[in-house]
Image (tube, rainbow, N blue to C red; front, top):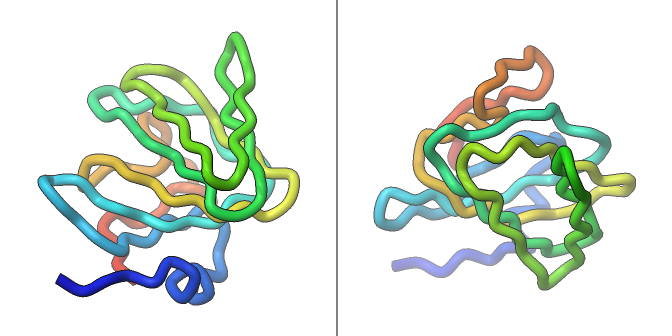
Length: 120
C-alpha cells in the first residue's frame, strides 16, 4: 500500500516505447512509458488498453481516423482494433491494461517489442 510518484518514476525512464510496470491490481498492470516517433501498427486480440496523457501530446492513429491525446486526457482502444501511437515530441503516458500484454500486440518487432512484466 505504497503510493507511487509518477514524476519520479518517469524520471527513471530513458528509453522510448519501453513500458515499465509501476503497479498492479485485479490482474491489471499500471505502466509508464515515454513515446517519441512512430510505433508499429498492431492490435490486441483479447485486451483493451487505456492511454492517459501525462506530459506532451501524442496521436493514436486508427485506419479510419486519428485522435490526439493531450495531458489529462485518455483514450481506450478496444480489443481487436488496429492502431499505432505517434508522438512528434516526447510524450509521457500512463497505460492501464491486463498483465502480460505485449506492447506490440500481434506483431513482434526487433526494435519496439519490449519485455513483459518489466518493473520499475
